[in-house]
Amino acid sequence: GQQLNQSPQSMFIQEGEDVSMNCTSSSIFNTWLWYKQDPGEGPVLLIALYKAGELTSNGRLTAQFGITRKDSFLNISASIPSDVGIYFCAGPFILTGGGNKLTFGTGTQLKVEL
Amino acid sequence: EAQVTQNPRYLITVTGKKLTVTCSQNMNHEYMSWYRQDPGLGLRQIYYSMNVEVTDKGDVPEGYKVSRKEKRNFPLILESPSPNQTSLYFCASRFSVSYNEQFFGPGTRLTVL
Image (tube, rainbow over all chains, first blue to last red; front, side, top):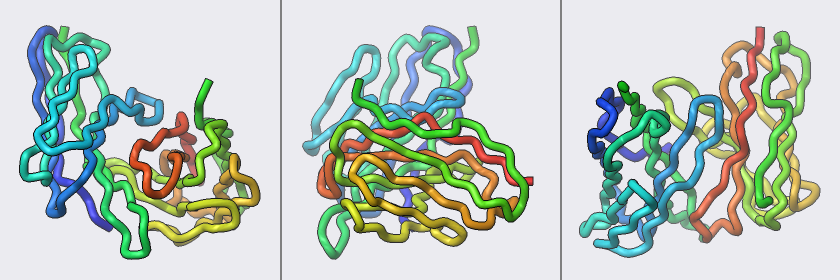
């Protein structure tokens, strides 16, 4: 099946640092989604982007829909210990029969050192 | 509270013993799906359902069955589990197949001995 290329695979940062991660696709998307998965839990939707160039914030998180519509970026400012988890990007591949299939990146594991 | 629920959260079983993992959503969503998550492989779709009585295979359907007799429930059935089905399973739902925002259940960690 299709997958999105997400990088970096993992990050180990100091508390207070800013974090950046990105996701790229071989196909053009009309939506980009960013999820966070806490250890032992299901992914939770953080931010949804619907327009190329769009910049959307959710607290300390900011995500951008790339101008080419083939990439997206997630930034976390001033990281704190509870930011630990796996961050996934997701985008819809259009199905020939109508509708779309949501496909996920391989995830970025974030670890925060106190 | 709008949510997707799964049961059980943890299950240890033996090879060949049929099991069912239940999934329910209270958001009146048409589209539901099952994923498995394995280290290094990300989230892979097992089966999905676009509406009641409409189900279809995802990327890794072998060894699994599903049913969608009512809108809110989408159980995952393993008729004869094998050790390679040891994984973390997530049920998810969204309003429709054309709507992109998807919500996940808390997960079921399955171990097949």
